Image (cartoon, rainbow, N blue to C red; front, side):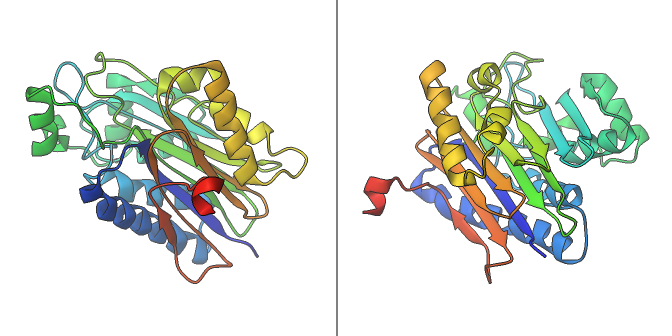
Amino acid sequence: MTLAIVVHGGAKTITDNKVEANNAGCKAAVEAGWAVLTSGGTAAEAVEAAIRVLEADRTFNASLGAVLNDDGEVELDAAIMEGDSFGWGSVAAVQGVRHPISVARKIMDTKPMLLVARSAERFAADNGVEMCAKEDLITGEQRKEWEEEQEVIDRPNTVGCVALDANGTLAAGTSTGGTTNQLAGRVGDTALVGSGLYADNKLGACSTTGDGESIIPVVLAKTAIDLLDGDRHPDEAAQMAIEILKSKVEGEAGCILLDGQGRVGWAHNSSDMACGYMTTSQDKPAVFTKKKTLAEKI
């Protein structure tokens, strides 16, 4: 029985004073998802559990900690997909929801659809997902950055997770607050199956992060999954997917990949990318804030 889980906290520049927080957040998310997997839970349940941890951590750009749009408000996107049934659910531009990934999960269990704004919020409330005043998701740091029009250096674009459960089922999930000062109502790649995430039991599961306007036209998650064909290692496939993006569009991006054998891969062209993973071959989670190049390893 092979179990595996990988999380990311976003492709970005991580300043020295935020390294510890990024590592701690990714480790906590991995542990939450791993606890689900080792207790017999499904990959989708593990993905939801891990992302909920990241959404509750103000280090990351998802729910609490999300950046503010041009109206000075938090709008959230999230999605989840399961690789056996190809079930999926997505929400976009929602406010006053503490865990948008849980709304997406509820939608996946109902019927595949993408709900936005007030419709998604009504669905969340009707299905018992934790609600809050929309102002409760704005931290002092976020408000100060927005009011002073500061350049946001170390707030990531998206958080995500991929997991493999004991039944061999793969799942992927993403969650984000978008980009700083984005137009109200703007939707990036996170909520879009194929771009922000994808899962197929025959190949693997992928969650992406980065500039949505660059990720969407190259359908980055599906591109990375297709590169797993022929038993290519996820690490090679992830790097190839990022190289394809770089060859076609401008922008920073990253992705995490997991195949049905529990092999892990990740890559990014941003300065840093918070990442953590755990498999049955490890005795504790591994966490990183940067993928070393071959030259750096030597």
